[in-house]
Image (cartoon, rainbow over all chains, first blue to last red; front, side):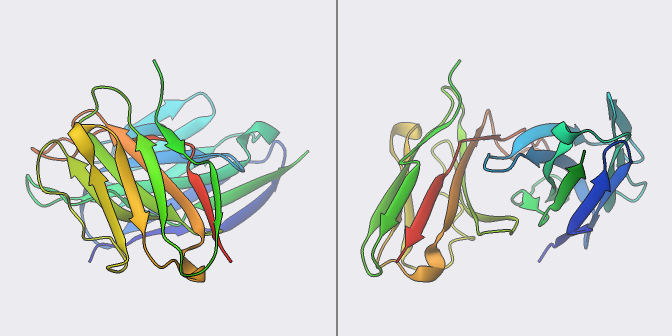
Length: 114
Length: 118
């Protein structure tokens, strides 16, 4: 079955440093979504990428979808303490029109030292 | 409008007892999902309801787990004869139309129910 893997599992950075998490799928994805879960909270949708090679930005966050639609990355520039949390990627496998369920990666837990 | 709500927020039970977890999706959302998140782990898909279609139960870990969705709205996840490994946060999410027809939608998550089986 489809697997979605995320690395690293944990990342500790000093405030102001950049941060990147990577998401890789064993199969082609029809789209990919990113979620953020604050400590003690529930996942909150950040963004969805659909097109091959797509790049989207949200302030200090940059999201990329690979050309082969099998990988994605989230990059945060100049991290702040408010960025703390676990970042999950999630993707639907591309079944050429019909799709399975949204499969989540295990997440990257980001801690930011002030 | 109101988001996805879940109840109870916390549940402590003894091994072997049955528990019911409730989810109220966003009004008008036809798709409803249940996930389980164990401590420090990612989200594990359990079950998916889409409109009046038969639910996709492919993620349920055992026959002790079942779920219903009444009237296309509220859903109840039932765990029978709970085991300690069932301890986790159970998250419910809803989306407007769900997966299908080549279009996938954003899922809106509830706050979750933290289940602890002693």
